Length: 209
Image 1 (cartoon, one colour):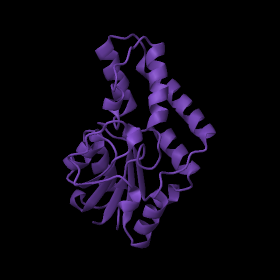
Image 2 (tube, rainbow, N blue to C red):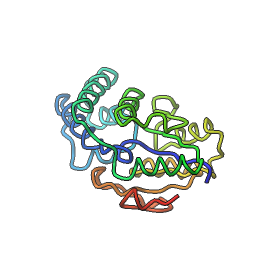
Image 3 (cartoon, rainbow, N blue to C red):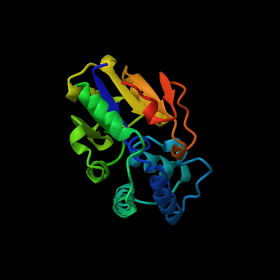
């Protein structure tokens, strides 16, 4: 391994409940009656792709771009007021990776603004050599685009990269990119199938470098 790439939501921050709450509220306001577990099935994907899919599936009538803007504003406001901390073990893992000279990247499906807000709030932005949002690549997870782009910018071939993911779509993206994938079993991320991961952990502290 020469580089370690983090997902963000559900790996660095327990933000999935925040996303679920905002998305459920906006879905209801726009006439979408969600099935049980429906939002969980989109964990790890880009918000624009999720809302476009929900619009088609439920034959709803709303402007995706307008809804995305509203959702982002709500999430940023919540994050500002919530005083959240990184998931246990993340700070220590970042320190280990830095001390041992590995390159560190982040590839998240969240918006540039939300990623920046999280990393700034946690004062860990300078720990990453490369940070990319799903907004900055052609296709979101489960396509491998974002992880391939992070590896390219790090200057490391995919086979020498390890990815840390909490979502089925993210695990698929990492594997399709040709990387080693660690699946973090996070109960806040819903029922995620991490069976394709090379290794599964229930505690970030269990990851040894």
